[in-house]
Image 1: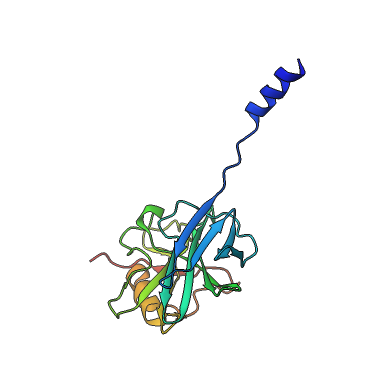
Image 2: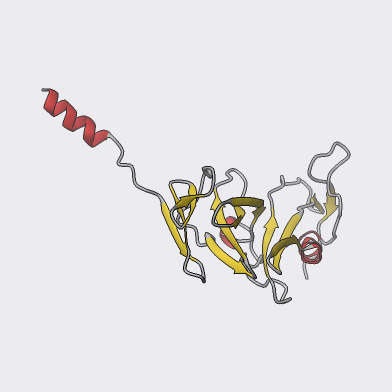
Length: 195
């Protein structure tokens, strides 16, 4: 009876699979994410990252100048997923930022795909719009702020020009401070006219 019970319990136990992503840098170093930790040439260089989407097409390494950046998609339900961005050295993974990213599969149509040269300025950009509540008025809506970044000269910097351009495209206007008088996101604006 004990043998049958042991076999039955073994069958019911979930099989732990190793979660893994592997990248190679231009210099031949191996960067991997194994069971939620970042490794550089088999050396662990990060604390665990929660909610990684291992099969994401946005998980990637981008090298710019002497910098190696790792982009990892994480689940941020009920909001849109986020990209966590790390600067990598052989000793350490430094988290630089989290960003919403553009992707029509997340319900945002007419937004370009992330990690491309969105505005044709010669630099890779990423970012996007978060989620705001619906506003029950046919002429108005809550302002939907965006944040875009570019990879330039081995750094990741806020792209204020692209952010303004995309906010105007979606909201019809750019607001530097879109919070309401209570500090909540976001103020109500007139819906932009469709062209």
